[in-house]
Length: 291
Image 1: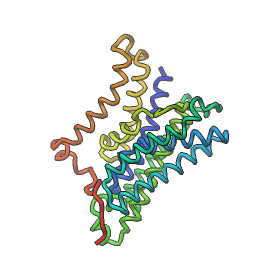
Image 2 (image 1 turned 30 degrees about the vertical axis):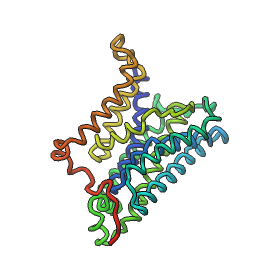
Image 3 (image 1 turned 180 degrees about the vertical axis):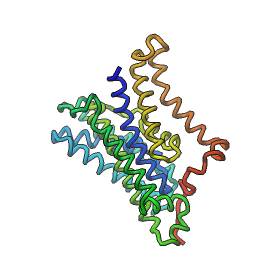
Image 4 (image 1 turned 120 degrees about the vertical axis):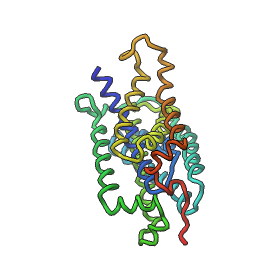
């Protein structure tokens, strides 16, 4: 039983880090629906570098770096050019879906390296995820930098008048966001499931996107939501461990995605926006042009 819960917490780590990256970007007013694409890049590039060099550290650094580049690309189209952020994000997802399938194909198969040591059955990255949540909460809630990020996400015009460089702050946020997404993808490919295959993330990025809305843009609630979805994901893979002979495993595999759809539908209702909408960054998804 502990193995099941430990595996669930390992899965939740990936959701936590990827969704945390999106949360930071959204708090600055930048929406990126292409989390899956950024994670695919981080997973594929990290896997390739680690397999060629035999070095885990280089693999993770490569995943973080390519994630930062993807974040910078999204920032260029969304901040500098003022393009539609949803369209830009979908472009990143499509690019990641196609390009990683092409460049990663020769590396199809297991990583072939000794597994990263765990601690009581838990991946060391679980503790990294906890630390990142604590750091993000502190930065966003208790520092001048966090105030700047929240300000440009709420009212960039007022922030600019107050002396805050909106573009610089948003670029910092989206690059950091991309780096965390790339790290999440690398953790999936190098630690959680070190076997590369075509489109092997199977929707983890979209679940992470839903988690940001589920969390009400609060890092601590995000952690709880990630653990819930991590458990649901593991349950969808091994339902017989908790509910033997109850429904088909194929039905269980739809549960995380069904809940994801439900969360996104709930967030779009007038009831939710009128009752809980105050947590949503006011300028989320809106381009800003300095007057």
